[in-house]
Amino acid sequence: MLSYVKGPDATLLEMTIDEGFRRTVAAHGDGEALVVTQQKIRLTWSELDARVEATARGLTGLGLGAGDRVGIWSTNNAEWIYLQLATARLGVVLVNVNPAYRSYELRYVLGKSGMRALFLREKDARSDYRSILEEARGGLECALRDVIYFEHPTWEAFLAGGRDFARAVIGPEDIANIQYTSGTTGSPKGVLLTNRNLVNNGWLIGERLRMSAADRLCSPVPMYHCFGCVIASMMCFLTGTTLILPAPSFDALATLQAVHEERATSLYGVPTMFIAELQHPEFGRFDLTSLRTGVMAGAPCPIEVMRRVMDDMHCREISIAYGQTESSPVITLSHVDDPVEKRVSTVGDVLPCTEVKIVSTETGQAMAVGEVGELCARGYMVMRGYDANPEATAAAIDAEGWLHTGDLALMHADGSLGIRGRSKDMIIRGGENIYPREIEEFLYTHPAIADVSVFGLPDEKYGEIVCAWVRVKAGASLHEEEVVQFCQGRIAHFKVPRHVRMVDAFPMTVTGKLQKFKMRDAEVEARGLRKAAAVRTA
Ligand code: AMP
Image 1 (tube, rainbow, N blue to C red):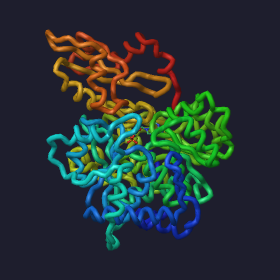
Image 2 (image 1 turned 180 degrees about the vertical axis):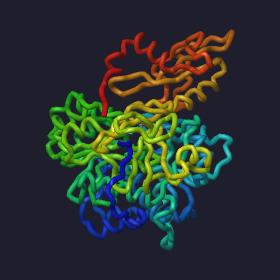
Image 3 (image 1 turned 135 degrees about the vertical axis):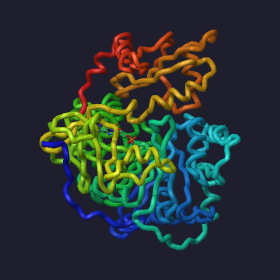
Image 4 (image 1 turned 90 degrees about the horizontal axis):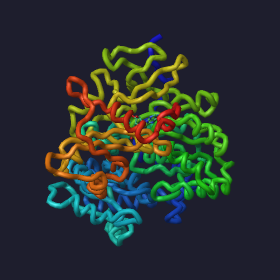
């Protein structure tokens, strides 16, 4: 039997994000739509609609309309939601920028994305975003005209400058969102997603998890990422589920508190977040019995953690989702009534209207059931492509419309899937994807570095962490600590190597290919990481 499966047929929604949202507002106007704990905001669907309208007027006042691009570089807040919906209402394309990006990465995105306005916070406990932006913009030619700070009078001025707008004539096939993901080419790539991609993925996720206006979702995952803005918010916009944002960025205590106080029925997170919640010293203080379901995704999910989420957090119907930004993102998702064993040890079954096959990384031919190969997916959810990058698009989506995920997986006899690794060079640290090449290219900008190799090491908390081996130029000297300092403030904190080793040479094949697995094995031995390397995942 070959590894090919097609999800059940379903009638896809042929509507825009705004049409889907309005349908929910019409059906559940007085129901609770949004709770943002840190801002003490609590809105019904009708109230949210009014904020969205005001935000859309503000964007119009800036002279923005269908097809224009607007960036958001922010941790989670209510404005994120207003902007997501207001841009959709106008046909403006929302560009998500990871709030952890620092000047090197932000400069790249400003230059590439063509965004005309950028929304951000001025500063928070962690960062001074205004000065990072100034540094990133220095001497750069780009389309950016307006910068609007949320907590600054500029947000009020932005709303006050609002103007009436005509309903945009946009359709399901129009691009709604560009999500930047780290690129294998060494720089982030903008994934173009249509209204149709996002509406249907959000809708089908909600259907499979049986979400409705009676549900309350606590989502501590970042909004800039597809987990936050599709699996969480888009799903809520289409099903009427209340969205609870417990903190600007992940905080285990605030998340537990929000589940308890808001009587959440669903909880999301990457494995690292669930681990932090389960290990929190005050875990026992909270009543989590309202939880029914949830989603763990974004990185290999440890089987033991899944079991504990079911038993200790009362999330009997917790599901694992698997996918990637390029597929809107969800490809597979467990059914809430799958047997426990299947739910903890597989990433579930394909969603409706989705095809998956597992192919040989050498021949491209479909593998037999049970054999490991590259997971390819096809259907409504495949991205339009990478922004202004036809070569990368052609490398990701083949002539028959198959998206090549770069993930190694196997199909079980019942059609469910298991993830077994990656065919591409990537590290996943606590759900954040890191392409070693990007960090290597950054480190080469250091004047004393001759050669560098970046790879992942197993870690019980984060799944993987970043390690760099560095060779210095003849006559130069450099300390491990200086390498770390050079990264700080210039690249996102999660990309900064945890471990650095200065070496004279790298293990290589006779043909000169670097053998990262040997560097990794040497570090696992030297640092005693065998236990972390042995964790079983779905
Ligand atoms: P992103 O584009 O940031 O959503 O990252 C997608 C990548 O995360 C995938 O290509 C996988 O490598 C990984 N990933 C996502 N979900 C899972 C999962 N449930 N199990 C294992 N890896 C996952």
